Each structure stands twice: as structure tokens, then as C-alpha cells.
Amino acid sequence: MKLAGSVFKKWNKKIHIYLGLFLILFLWVFAVSGLFLNHPKWFGGQPNRVGSETEVTMPDSDDQLAKAHDLMTQLDLSGEVIFRGTQRPGQFAFIAMKPNERHFVNVTLESNVAKITRVTGNIGQMMGNLHTFSGVRPIWGERPSVIDWLPTRLWSISIDALSIGVILLVASSLYMGFSQKEVRRGAVLSLIVGLGVCSFLFGDSSKSFAISVRDYVQPFGLPRLNKTEY
Amino acid sequence: MNESAAKRNGLYLWSRKIHLYLGIAISPFLLVFAISTLMLNHGVTPNPIEESSVASLEIEDGVEGPALVSTVLDQLGLTGEVVGRGQILDGKTVVRVSRPGKVTVVTVDIAAREAQVKDRIFGLMDTMRYLHLNPGPHKSPTWTFSKLWGWVADSTVYITLLLTLTGVYMWVVLKSERRAGLIALGSGAFGFAIILFTLLAL
View 1: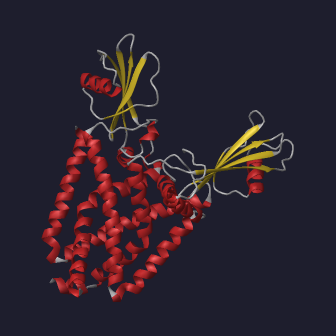
View 2: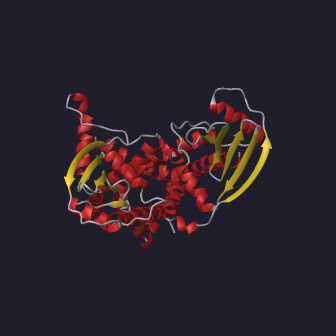
View 3: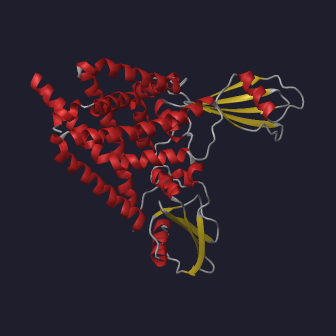
């Protein structure tokens, strides 16, 4: 039993080190870009916009995404396709989005002329785009969001991996803190301080916690209150 | 300097203390960001409970704008991040008050001296999502709590960066972990570079 404990302790430390090193660049990007998003003035300034027009052949497909991909091939564009809301009559519009550039494509169906606006930003704006690239797409007015570009899929998987990795790093650090007698008191004190600040910031969400519990037990027969979509 | 001597030096000992204690102290915040990131990345939308009530108000004639907003909020005992300038349209004004776990929308009928109060109460997960998205690039917080949360979010970033630096330093000192650590660091960097290249250059 004692041996199993010491083996777990040893591997817990190793996993903490290896996981931390593996994820360090991802962690830096998301930490720094999060900071930039909280301070947009640090990298202020308007993005550059360059417009152009070209004739295209409008594809016959009924599938909007297939149409957009066909047009992107004609226009030599790449990126994630984003549709903003519903299409205007007589037009077909979408955004070909990459973290470092966006192409706003707007085809007039009568003339088959595509207006393309290429928008590029500074490093701060690019970092912000990396931070929000796949997760928060409703900010572009797109519902529902469908990931349609392989790099976005990979980035999305990286975001999941980073989140799960951070949870594991936290769990392993808590284990290390509490399993060593000489640092246990300090570790408990640190956790109390952290939890104290965190619970203060959650304010009156003790009620929220009750709601979460209630949601969890609801399938077991408790009545559900009036729930609405946000 | 050999490994055991290096582990006894002041910088290593301080790095270890900082890494352990600060890491544990910010662990609740790291969990908030990590869990909410999973929700955001998978398009989990908030699912609040809605409660409605009606309250009578005492509003003096001619009150409009910020004065009207503060009168309404004072009488209803509401605090939070306020959206609404107190402009009266069709005899009504709408004020939205947000705070972690709760959004209240107050529609004031000026002539009837009455407020319809709609509370949207969010669960713990949605509260984490709210905290993750705030203050964000499009909001200038005015409520003290929001400002405080902005500072805490920034501090979490600074401390996380410090933790990575102390972590790397301690790993460098640990000779026994150097080879495996290099493989972990190298494979992470390789994966990161490949994905970033495909995102930016393809």
C-alpha cells in the first residue's frame, strides 16, 4: 500500500512536470491573449482594410457551406467559413476567417461580382482572434456554429487539451501540496486564501450553486422551474 | 553545481515555495477558466431560470436619464454592471443589471409608477462562463466588483506566467527529469508550431 502510494506520488510529480512542459506554449498564448482582450487599448488602432472586386461563377449547390467553399477556391482563399446571420436578398455573403486575416466576401447574384474586403490587424488583434477563434463564434452572429476547416478543428482540440491539462495540473499540484507534511500547512492556507477570494467574487451565486444541484437532481423527480433560453 | 546542491540554493527554494503556494492559491481561478473554456469551446449556452415580479416605484415627475436609473436601482436594491441610460421611449425605460449568477432586466412604466422585474438566475457553470467573458474587450466596467474581477483575471495571468517560469527553472535544475522533460517540451512546441502554421499560413 505504502509502495503504491509512493509510486503514485512519483508519477504525479512526473506528470505535473511533463504536462506543464508540453502545454507551456499553449498556456502562454492563451494567458497573454486573455490579458490583451482585457486591455484592448494596449494594441489600439484600426485594422487595415483592402477592397477588391472580381467576377465569379456562382455554384449551383443548395448547401451554403459548399457554395462558400467553391467561391473560396475560385478566389484562392482559405480559412473558416462564417455566416453572419441570414443572407440578404440578391446577395451571398460570408467571411473566410483566419486568426491573422479575414476576407469578407459579398457576391451580388445578379452580376456575379464578388466584393472582397481583406482585413488584417496588429499582433494584439491576432492574439485576440486566436483566443476566441473556435469557441465563441456567436460573437460573429453565426448560429449554429459548424467547424469546417481542419486547422480550426485542430486548434479547438488544442483548447480542450489545454483546459483538461490545466485541470490535471491543478489536481496534481493539490495532491503534491497536501501529501507532503512539511508544506501541508502552507498549502492549506494558500487554498483557503484562493477559495476565499474566489467565493467572494462569486458573490450571491451560492444560489447559483443551489440551482446547479437542483438541475443535477431534477431527473430524479424534483419539479423543474420555468427555464428559458438565454 | 550538482543537483542536490542546486536544490539547496536560495533561488531554487524560493522558486519551489512560490510555485507551490501561489499555484495552489490561484488554482480555483485556473479551474474557473479551464472549465468555462470547455463550455465555450463546445458551444454550451447558458440555461437560466427566469423569475418575474412587479414592484411599485416612487418616481418624481420629469426625472429622466441617470437620475431615473439610480432612483429605480436604489428603490429595488439592485447593484451590478448597469446597462441603460434612463431614456424614456413610449413611456418606458429599460435597465439591465448584470452580476455573476444573475441578470436583472427592469422595465419601468413611468406613468404607472411600476417596474416589471425579470431575474435570470444562472447556475454555477454559467457563472463561470460569465466570469470568463468579463470584462473582455468591449466593456469598460463601472461596478466595483467588475473592476475587481478584471484585476483578479489579470493577476491570474501574471501569476500563471510566473508559475511557468519557476516551473521551467526547477525542471532545469532537476537533471533526472531533463531528458524526458525535453521530449515533452519539444513535442509540445512541435505540435504548437504545426497547428499555428496551419492556422496562419495555409
